[in-house]
Length: 310
Image (cartoon, rainbow, N blue to C red; front, side):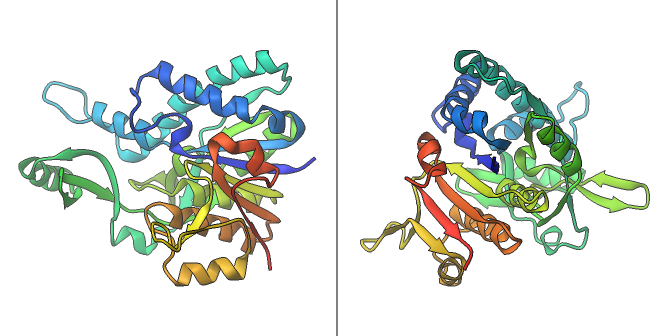
């Protein structure tokens, strides 16, 4: 029996054209889990997931308004999104479990991800979060909250640090659940970012890339396979050009060469490739990136991009 970590992209619950209501997200989660039912039945599986649309909505609902309770900090909103998405996935899984005759129960684990307080990302916030503001609103929140903003075509948007993950604090809880025959769902949205202080670990306002955090968990628990399911069929070189080419089976050294060439965009495929390479550099056997709808073909090597150690 193999140990497989499956990282679900944001499209597993929502597409950009969907209504962001609860029922729609449950339906999307049902489709995703239904496509994974065979591997869930046969292998030891951990599922991680993104939280972009959900945490953005939570931030909007937590926005300070006159006469309303104060909003929660970003790291607490991340924790809320883990609980929300956890319920969505649990409800969807109950249907799949009944229809497919699965015996495995699912556990949702609120997960903290440790980062280094000296990470350069804290000095250069770059990750956009939440809604768009007017210039007047942005200046107000800069003064009142110390938020950082960038100007975009749609207005001003808050940016926060995106530090590199160094540890998953609930890794032993996740491992214990897995050894007990459960299906853990964890590291939602990259985990709740925390730093070590004299009082213990404390939350910080940041966003951790969920694929990088998933890779850390995968190699810390010595998983055999790390699977990233997203909205594209393959990793491509020369993307968008006439010479565009899908990568099918590549070695770490070849992929590192493409990274140095700048083949993978920082805001899209770049972090996914980086996460796959991190897993393999720390002893992983294989990493695969492919389309969610082709999940079983990706897992079986019939679709997607497979990256192997040299």
